[in-house]
Image (cartoon, rainbow, N blue to C red):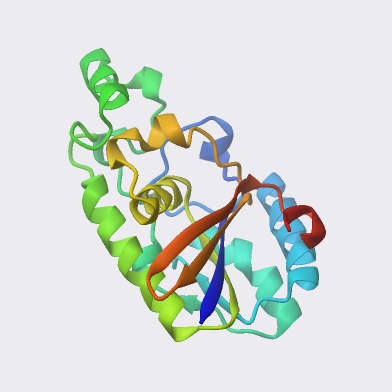
Length: 205
């Protein structure tokens, strides 16, 4: 049976406004992020997901809470949905890193990921694992998952068989609270929408 899994990036934080790498830093959403969480709730009121999952990081929990309260659902929090740890880049913009580190990362963000950070390939493996678990557990249902920018893009590359090394080039943008819709069926995955604002569902159909 088919499972429709919609992944939403969390709302904006103070660091995301400045395009700083947030990763494992547990920041709250800012006032814009709060409005984006409300927009996601309004979208979910039309879409009516059967289940909610989320990263346990504060910004993801704050983003999904209005939707959970509206629908009367308790989100499943799973650490495998946390953002990639960016190591030495945490709290910094790409331009603030040593030039050699920034250049190597731009050329190959998997092979030359940030020093002290998580291997993006390992992050892709853990999120693919939980993604398949969601698909199996909620067959025939619609699921909303609130997670993170880099993690979602790595997942899309992994499930579509794209090179992880190209995730920044192939999927250059995923806005705060933007939606990615995937179809899961017996482990086979199809992409139905990417980087769509949380608007009324007929716009996403």
